[in-house]
Image (cartoon, rainbow, N blue to C red):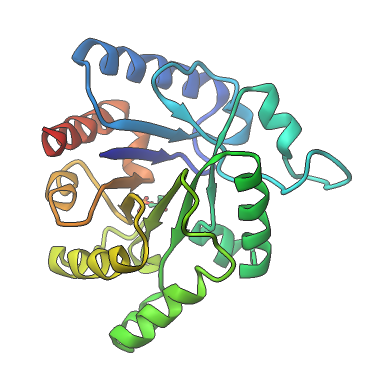
Length: 235
Ligand code: 13P
């Protein structure tokens, strides 16, 4: 199981360091087995790491260069970061990243040997069009992505479930993950309004290999309780 937390533009360098220290202590004391990943804001990427995989929420596909406002490989390397989130719905829909730009980013960080958590997910109007339209939409988000990459993790996050408190039914999650499993033999995370009170049931579903948690990851005690839920699925 994998339990990943995406802080988005929340938390500071200081609060992230305190959070990671506490989480690391929990993981070590309880000897938990799930892989834990945290994606803090870029300013906090130099925070403590041990068993926790700390990753970048985004980076530019270049060693360095004239890319104002971006973080590139050189800056990640300085902090020993080798994990990255690519294709998140907020980058696609709020920041306007195209599939082409996302695929370039993917190819670059794959070439660098990064662990890549690659996100896909549909808006509500697509889901309402039925299963064929939904799967075609998700397929389009996989264009240009090498699905055989050994360090790939897929996160399925329906756009309408992110930050809304809404989730697909457990059977819808299971159906979708099972359909994805036929195409992609990689760990499949579910994301979108995962909370302390639904994480265990979601992780117990077939073909769900973990969760990608936004808002509810900001509370370290709650996040650790989801790691403990994942542990039960591992055993
Ligand atoms: P929420 O858990 O806040 O819905 O966010 C999900 C997400 O976007 C994680 O990447």
